[in-house]
Image (cartoon, rainbow, N blue to C red; front, side):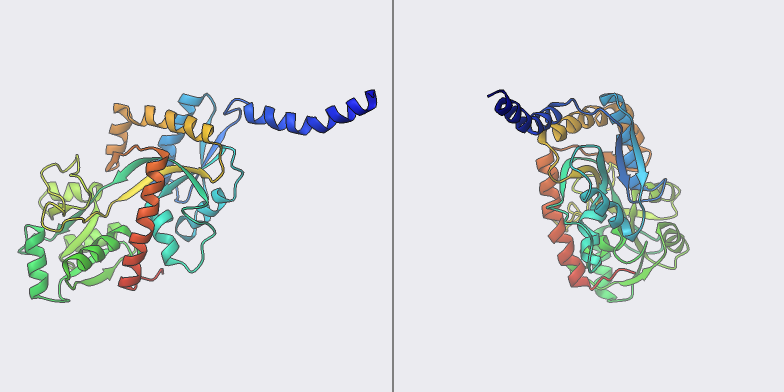
Length: 323
């Protein structure tokens, strides 16, 4: 009888240990936030903001780790295949989750099925800028000018598939206009081309354009978000300017591997929402041309589900290929 009791207790020990593990407080060790961009990039910056706030809120260090390459998909795959225990998170972006899967024949993750969204953190607002010599002060005037000169107005971008490219392709599609694409290797050389008059138009981050707009070297005619930029409050949105439904901003957020317990997601979400909403954090984001954007895990998941096919449709229609 005693032997049978010992066997019965022994059989229950793994289940008991598993239950103890599930009931263990979280976190009990450092948290890694995986970023797919080099130090100083937007994804890295968002990861560091989140890491600082999680460290302060949870009492365990949160650190950013770079895994660069393949437009962020290497980092995405790494997190997707990590244990769903809350200790490996992704500093994800609209580009990695909703654009890259359409540009490459194969990526090692499913943006919808392989992640448990926690919250969006910020959005980088983009703006349509024109060279001062261009006789267009509004989006309506730009569209009219483009229709009168099909394929002649040149726009520079940070490269094929970048937000600076996709935003203008979206305007082309929605307004039914034809523009000449000139890709550059990054936002900086594309801005140099616009300042020098080599191109007539650019869709670039507010942070990049703001100093030049203030100096009168370029003209901002509309921002591409659903709401006006806090840094350019007098510049209307594209939707306000006669193209309803236009929205092409770049957003960033934190995600965990799919299967991460709901209570851990809730703990991380609560810590981020409380701290990212602070004035000091909002100012830090603003210094990088970003506005804080906090939502629920369900809302973040819905944003990914909506943006993934939306960008895919535009990329296929425009024939954009990764370089």
